Image 1 (spheres, rainbow, N blue to C red):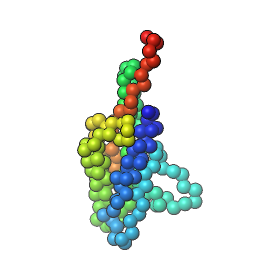
Image 2 (cartoon, rainbow, N blue to C red):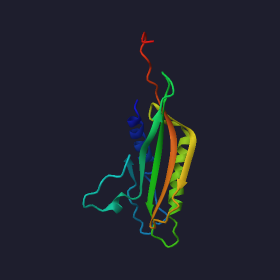
Image 3 (cartoon, rainbow, N blue to C red):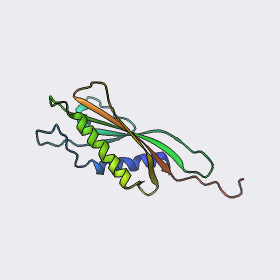
Image 4 (cartoon, one colour):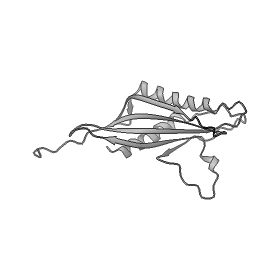
Length: 155
């Protein structure tokens, strides 16, 4: 199972996890669709960039295999973005709630799909730079993919 399959499994998992997401900025009663993207934001050609927000990007950062017949460790970075226009600048609360949901999900159940497993550490950060009305955060996580087993007689 490749890191791409891991990424696809995480996209589906996060779509389900955030299906009921509701922003602290939501005073209209309209709940925007929560978007989950693989690797990067899609390019919008003449479209409305705001339709992409809120979102999470599931980014494959790097990976390694230390020895033959060992599992592959893949580092995944989740990038969160919300738009919050209230004057109290409470968008960071939405970002922190998203991070908390992900943390709870993977500490309660390490498995993703049939083949992939999360293993701590779980690192997170929120953006320091002022990008009002957009608020950002990120999570860095390690997952393990099944080993590629050396065929008999090749050693």
